[in-house]
Length: 592
Image 1 (cartoon, rainbow, N blue to C red):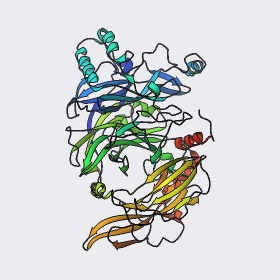
Image 2 (tube, helix red, strand yellow):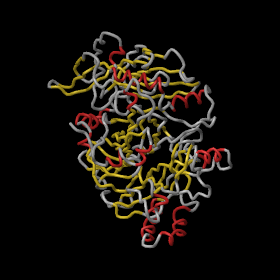
Image 3 (cartoon, one colour):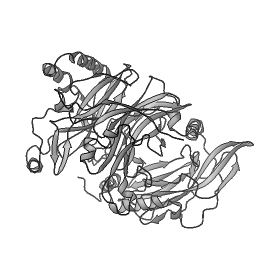
Image 4 (cartoon, rainbow, N blue to C red):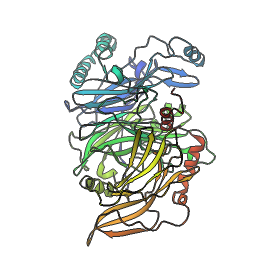
């Protein structure tokens, strides 16, 4: 079955290359962020905009700074009713940006080298009475993750006044607009120590979103390149830090998938929104996955990247990722091709094959968030414009996945009367940490555990709805096998609980994971299908382990996965931020 969203041919937002706004949105109006506030039925569509005044040079690279533009959509999020003539968040620069390599070299030696001069991507997040904005700001060569806020009611009043001002020429409203949106104190810092910074230490464009779980606790998702990690911020809207001032990166939750389309890097885009399948509350989250086609080729080198949207479903009770679509929600075709693959940025940047960079989602009708209800998401196309696509969960998630998600909340409290599984330590420290694999039979899960002195960090690995391990994953204590150029190969037993003609049964199967050689909480491969025979036993239990398959465990990993993992390890096209961070925490590497 096709699991694609539906594209709408109309482009919602394009750059305005002529007229009074060309200076700030004449080059790109893309990478959206969106929201529907609880106090207002309209959908607000922010977008990253840059114009003729925003070009600058970083060494030999062409770059554009950005501002936050805003369009107001109708209550269904389908049509633009107003597009504001000036940005709602901007830096008014008194320093000229370097226009060529010579100017760049001079800038790096001058007094403005570290001055905050540019803005990048933006995200909205409503939490209680507050509207938060998450964004990137930086100097010409540095980028920082930031967060500010204002009361949501205040934002709405400012938007309504801005709409009134659109009746006047831009040059006549500049002073009032500056006071309305750009003056100091309009946005209140919500980061570390009263600043706008999310991290107290090194980080770089980490694509951050927040969610508030059912119990009221806060989680932050971010992107230590090339993966997605989750952090319990302990109620803060910024990253906790150690006594040494090093930010807590949490644990890797989802990793790139060599052998599939998202083999290069992945990341969060817009703020996840609430949904539900049966009694299971969820967050719907359209994220990005990036394909580097050179990794598919033995003779390839460098980057040839294509950004596409994927669907992620997050458990609103636990923050656990229940589903990450195997294939993109959208693929390249004739619709939007003039932007996605043939846009100015895509043509000018040799490393890009195409871009659909999603930036948030809303339900078409406020409060209708079930599997058969309509959702829209908005995507940057070709790093140039903004388009819209739609889906129903029933149409883009396999039915057996939805069925398992619906059953999950009722089954979560079930603990088995069995002995906890074995714990096995990895034979050597990695990134300065001690590592172990620990099973928890009664809870039907395992964990990758790292320890540094008295600190212990656990990366839980649980069953996946829709797969052979949907109801539990068990570790029987077999030492992981280190395979050079591939990973730590970890065999596991997965179980599905089914209702057969004679009553409940447990189907048990074997699978294998490939854990990253340097940072084993990164799971680079996990079996989607059993690697051998299955067993069936009456009742719901941990099942009976089947006989393991003959031959090396590495042969249970598809050849394309093995080849791409090897190329990634050899070429390191994206680096690995989490491993670097762990080395900094352990003292093996100095902080930048």
